[in-house]
Amino acid sequence: MRILVIEDDRLVADLMRQVLMNDGYAVDVAPVAEDGHKLALGRPYDAIVLDLELPDRNGLAVLQDLRREGLTTPIVIATAYGSTADVVRALDAGADDYLQKPFANEVLAARVRAAIRRGGARSMEKVHVGDLTLHRVHHEVHCHGKLVTLTARQYALLEFLAMRAGETVTRPLLLEHVWHLRFDPGSNVVDVHVAQLRKRLRESGSTVDIRTVRGEGYALDVG
Image 1 (tube, rainbow, N blue to C red):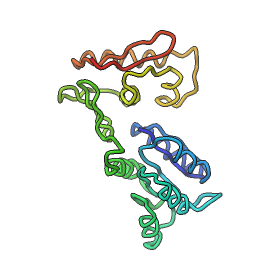
Image 2: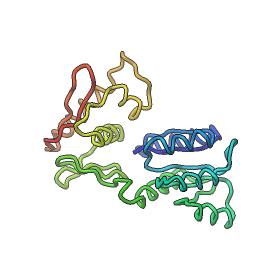
Image 3: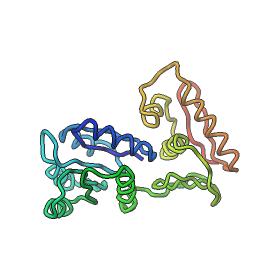
Image 4: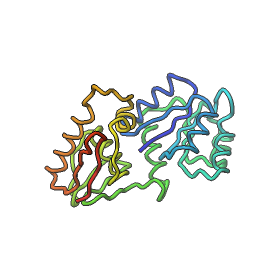
């Protein structure tokens, strides 16, 4: 799952990014309204966290424009404004939830999870690949009804491959979206984690396999 944070305060944005990454999400950050608007419409996100106090434009206007342009992605407002009128305006404009700063890290993560869960079919709360079921809100995997124990990184890797089952996914793409790193030709971090994940799937009894595509990357094969 991928979250967009539209927030101009670098310290706050970095904190939210870390909180959400710790909860298993990939996170993009836009420091100004214009960049956030373009990203929101140009890439598929599972949720957006939007500040109302942006340097180039009011966040409420961004919210209204996104809804007018047909964007249905869950949007959580995170702002210092906290009056009843502010909350009502944001919700009436199409926000799915409202957080007043400062807020606890756990509350941010829980509100985002709830917004995604309420997002309906678009959020794809459950993904089925072969004999595996991925519960994307809770970051859990079951095989024939039994929980498959994975690390947060292993789950993120499996989810990214599962959303592209049958397609070849390159190592640079995995590094960018799962590790948030630029491609390093000398790094074997992807290969190590794929090997560990492949081992866990086999131990669980799953027939789903991760196939190595020589010179390119990996593909999730459904047995």
